[in-house]
Amino acid sequence: MSRIGKLAIVVPSGVTVDVAGDVVHVKGPKGELRHQTMHHVTVRVDDGKVVVERTGNEKPHRAAHGLTRTLLNNMVEGVSKGFRKSLEIQGVGYRAAKSGEKVNLTLGLSHPVSYQPPKGVTLTVEGTTKIHVEGIDKQQVGQVAAEIRDLRPPEPYKGKGIRYEGEYVRKKLGKAGKAAKT
Image (cartoon, rainbow, N blue to C red; front, side):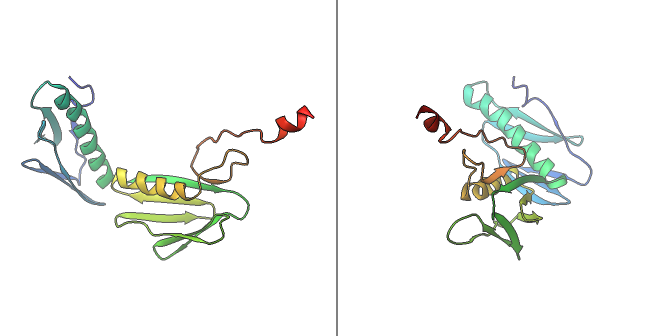
């Protein structure tokens, strides 16, 4: 039995979970999410808890069990608390500025870069070097943060670029080894 899949999901107050066949609707104070479950699992709501059970014991059933439970737990957490990823910009002249929904980035390129977030994700800029990505869908928040980071990933020599908050960038020595040989 899956250690993750067998755990029941406690539904906090203010959040409602409705199961209609193989579609699960989760509604809370921050918004509403919907998920189509696989036919390998069944989902039911008992006394304010969501229980995920698998229909068989074959490998696809076992894999879908833990996955479905984790996805539903992320939905419940998203509509009640929301998710947030933070990005840091490092480098001389590198900065971010918010204009409407978009974020305009100056990243040492020959042109400024503008990023428009998808519906359901909000971007906030703190100072000129921090970007916060917020939303109720964990996958979408992570995807937007990865797309912004991919505009200028941190380079290994000076560490300039966009990185996740707290991310460690291992630096290389550069030309010091070549100069020492001569």
